[in-house]
Length: 168
Image (cartoon, rainbow, N blue to C red):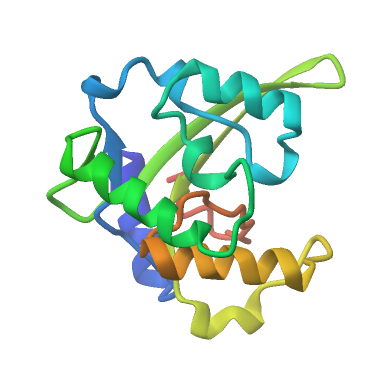
């Protein structure tokens, strides 16, 4: 039902679109060994732990050990290899990807439901930034996006849904 509601929501909101995503295959291992927090909250010690979990942990793509000049190209090649070797497989159809996240904050359990989709950046003036974005880091992520032709880490966006289209 949520997917149908997302499609209805997308008809009203001409800024959000489905896409053909990539997923880890069973060949890559268990998901717990493959996921990582956002790159900008991973310190040196946590990175070492994540790297040891799996040679296919996403941190190998999102946070290199060193920021050598051509590291974006190296990450793009690694991503291409993972796809060619069946570690990552692309969905056949365009989709929105529904996500549920459970977490503890200040000792309380929370669960949030969201979705991943493409966002039309030509309408980015409608986005209200919630944090200071440093040009150095933004530019680095843009270079990584250009090199890989992939957005390796989604961003959070909140939306107002006064008519509760997603809830119906």
